[in-house]
Length: 414
Image (cartoon, rainbow, N blue to C red; front, side, top):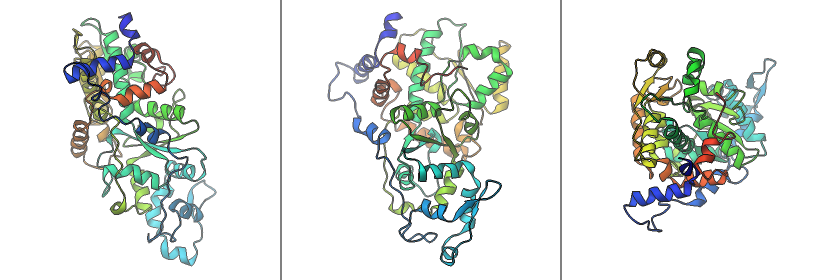
């Protein structure tokens, strides 16, 4: 076990690659689909994003950026709320206050837009794995370009960091579960689940690995690799707004926006998908992408464990609950000894993250879209994913032991 902990991820990747290809590793197949320049483009882009100009858009002056136009025409009142200043005759003809009102009503959205206008450092949209088909009339591949045109420096898919946390939890399962009586409670996805354990059964926290959520991992890594960066999480979950403010992890995410808030922004900026090119990136594995749906985390950990330890005699025997009543029931069953599972996964929303209160599409449709995207991933697990190996290396985490003992990026004190 000690020797295994000393193994580097490069060594583990090479070992898995030989198995994957069924024989001696062909150097031409190593790093399949891998372009090291892509991480540079995502995490170290130009200092400021390319802002949309509003030429031809009915609500704004020709040639003027949407954000400049917005802040030229709004002020904060005595109550700290945003409202329109008296509009010029020209602006009254062109600005639709009804369309822009939802943007002004969101403190988090307006704080984000202010950062886009005033921040000297890059501003990143970090988007949840549940993003598939959430935005009407916008292709998923166009989102990165849209965010850049609105002033963001880049968009990062949180599923890449779900990959890293899947790998961490699979390694922790391998280390901790040595007999049939052992069990783990997955920790790294849902803040509602963690709060439920804290409040109802704090004695179970010792069975929860101290992993941060993928959102927090993404924010921390971006800030570590791009000092001073502003991070904006985009997802379907209201609980993430509270999670981002928790004292031990509030260093990671500056602002949290829901899919609804971002949709309101797209409407206000009159985003037209017709002339927006797709900018697809393949950075995450099946395991990281499937996090957004019920049973996704345990499925990801199970396939990853089988990949890194096919000889482990004790396999992941998971049980899942989604929705608050089912999560409470699962915890009660555990405490009362009514479950034989060794890996317990809870999500506060029915259907998982895709069932979040600010998801914009039907839960079943969202689930199908996420699973379709997961199946298209070029890598089945995180250890097959060369972007995971490279990213960990850039963080100075090169061995299994270093990832398990990390207390700066991927770990928290529960």
